[in-house]
Length: 130
Length: 485
Image 1: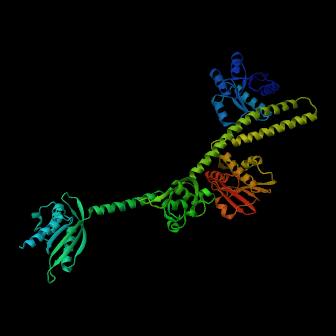
Image 2 (image 1 turned 120 degrees about the vertical axis):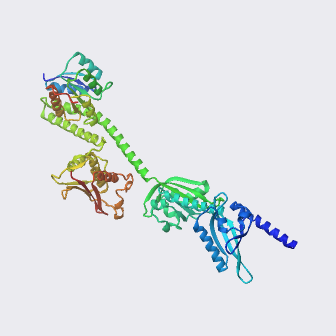
Image 3 (image 1 turned 90 degrees about the vertical axis):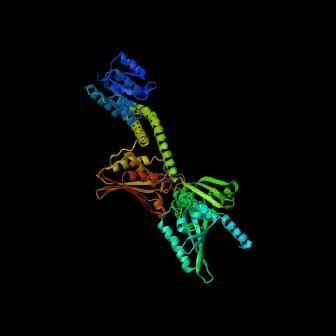
């Protein structure tokens, strides 16, 4: 298995797609639809990477990221968003300590390669982006 | 002495003592032989102190001004010599040492053989009259100063017929007319006749019936331009309430209007940015599922026809994604940030976008002649794209029957990037060329007239220049110069 990934996205078709895409890349995948659920799962289980949607009902993706960083400085968290390339969101995510940023507007192949790139960088022990 | 003479003498003294003027009888050397009560009262001296004393000592008591005394002495000498009376003015100090302005009359008294034997000096205290006169003069001057300081306001006055009788300094600045050339002309030439409400006749009628007129309107300058103003008109009445004419005060609000429009434009853009971000998010998610699912399916063992169709679905979905992306990029009004910009890239990026800008359904051919390897300019990518997009849309709109847009880039003396956008449209009359970059200039029915003025501002902020060359019926060419880094 390449990576054990937690996918957090409130839209079922997107969640399922990411699940299928990542499984094809030999990743182990768990999914959930809210930030609250994600934090619960992370308490019980350990993951190599979290793929975290920014726009979530209830607790936002950025809040989830902040919560994760309060207890775990090193877990790679890659933000994914339908807002595309948005400077404000990128800088906010970096400020909160994300490991990467993916726009859902990217072509599918690019999403996967970008994901693998960020996950690899984070896993080889590079400091998470500040 | 005869009682009758005594009586007459008493009457005369009484008369002299009760008069409001100074009466002094002098010998030819200026010694006082007689004075009336007014003299004593004014100087504060007793009768015995005055009689026999020299007039200068009495009138200039405590004032050491030699010049004043010399002047009086000269007057007396002249009177005696010429045997003619003389009127003159002088300031003396009264008993309280206040200055009094006296209008004097010195008349020589002649003997039977025309020798001067004495002089009669009569003085009239005109201090109060002069002060009143001075303050009237001061008020007049102050009023003039105030009126000419009101440079932001055009203030003009007409008579009852509407002919201009006063045209203030601010009016000259705002409306371009010189006082001399416009006074006595009919004020109609300043007023916009585009609607009945703006006509002078209507305004005067309002003032006559309602006592006042106040409205946001426009006035016409000498060169024929309209200035947005708040115009107030009132009756011009004299102190007795007689209606003499009309007073107009106009405040120039074109700058405020311009700012309001710009604020409106930026609010609109900000709203558009928010809206498109929301829409883009909603579109991106399903698009990702469509393209992602077709990509996954394509990896299955399927009939080639199906693979081809899936490929088509994927590529069309990506096309929509790119479009959404462009909208997002364009609508995200980020702060201007200057960085190296490749003008060719900026143009290439914006070209497809121009076609989606709600343009008339016409056949337009776009010819690109972009010079390779021209240096970068320092600029804000988004702002420069906005300029190019505006000019391209403008070119489209100037060709209702279709035509050719030629976009050329190049370098000028290795100092400037040169960008030309040329159309084969209707063109602009020569007399309007100077106005096209002015805010609110528009020939379109639905235009705000801000597009080109925004372009102009952006290029100016980039230390560049934008020029328009146009020939009626043949087309227009916009030429932009932007300094290289």
